[in-house]
Length: 179
Image 1: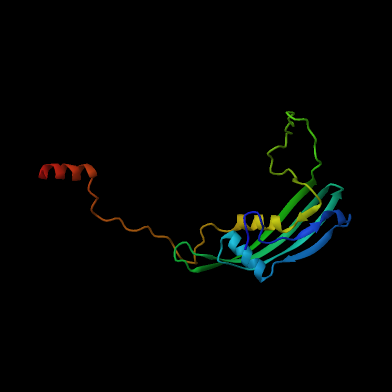
Image 2: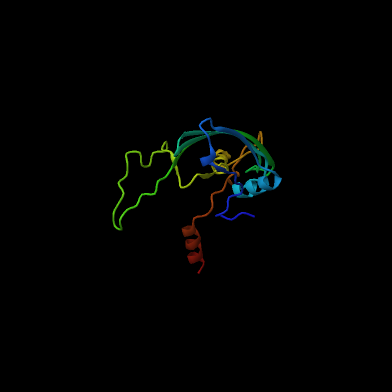
């Protein structure tokens, strides 16, 4: 069972051991891990979860991660509750930068750079042990359809009755007239 602090699936890699040539590896979640991912992502099932990952070292503190994630998930149709299967193919890219600890004096502030808040800024990491599964899980939940529907199923709003409901003021007026 996973908790909010514990990810459903981890694949730790020591970036410090990465050479200039980089590395290629395959990440696959087994049945138990897929069940934990399904519970974490709030889907009925994860039938497949795997990625081919390419790692590159650009300098002693800069790395890049490219991955091709393939996942097969099963969700509940929002209309019929029938199972809806989805095949997801997701390209994942992260630029990593080893954060150097900046020491400041109490009360001193650190100025923001022009890139602060920019989505294209490299991800800051605290140490060289990096969880390769984290960006895969993040991209998976972003790709999941929040309102899956079975093929051919349309949502139909309930028909409105012909007679309009009586106004609460009309009901009060009728009660007053009876007394």
